[in-house]
Image (cartoon, rainbow, N blue to C red; front, side, top):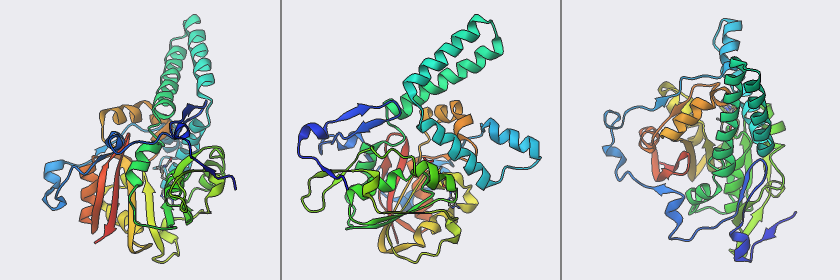
Length: 343
Ligand SMILES: C[S@@+](CC[C@H](N)C(=O)[O-])C[C@H]1O[C@@H](n2cnc3c(N)ncnc32)[C@H](O)[C@@H]1O
């Protein structure tokens, strides 16, 4: 094990851009906390109605890969296959050497311009736009992993050495961040696309530092992937055999992929495996203008599945209506977040 303990304030201020992602070990003071998470805008969930807050925004621009499959097969893309396409596509962006890619796309664009090839210019322009948007959203702004926002959202749970269940775990980022904050427990990651276990999680950078806590000293400590106790299960959530044995059940980007008729079932997936008094932690993408823009420009990369963008009020009302007691709610850079218990 290579656990590094942080004693120096300088290490806590460290942020660094690698070619593919940002490292961000910056701590925040109590005063700064509200910069990273905007909390608790709703005082009384029983007063909210769908009539007042409206329904989520549905993203209807789909990936070409999905549309082509449906044309070729004259049927709707099966949900499992849509996740297989999504995960392969999304992963291919996380591993890009972004500065090198920006350079390459720029050269290709200029090459098409010089040839006066209109279709080539249009296509190359789209590629240039996407790589710049990815650079800004993921690498510069760190909007997808958002460690400071997630740490602010996840802090304050009353758990020790928790057993964490991550439903639809993909690369497992948020469970690792939770486990760094509440160390010594174990993580069960579940995803029914084996690519998530074998590639997205397996290739998640070993060097990526998660800022967390040292149980013994209460100081900050850096954890890396190899320091967590992870069991990764490739299985459909609906077939899991676990009992009510987890201190935290987590999902990130799950609820918004189900139309209203299925939302109760998704909430039940979380409740089903929770110890009495355990926490449900859920996040969903925000319905903000910049997210709508992002999913439009990145539709070929991201939109293989049904997808909604919702406000924190809408997300909270789904959980409240389905029997959860909302302890903390708010939004971080690009996601809404809720910490809840079963009523
Ligand atoms: C949108 S992703 C979660 C977002 C994630 N943070 C990411 O970076 O991709 C949802 C994940 O849930 C998985 N999933 C969806 N339905 C599932 C089910 N019934 N059982 C297991 N996994 C499921 C998909 O394979 C996918 O990897």
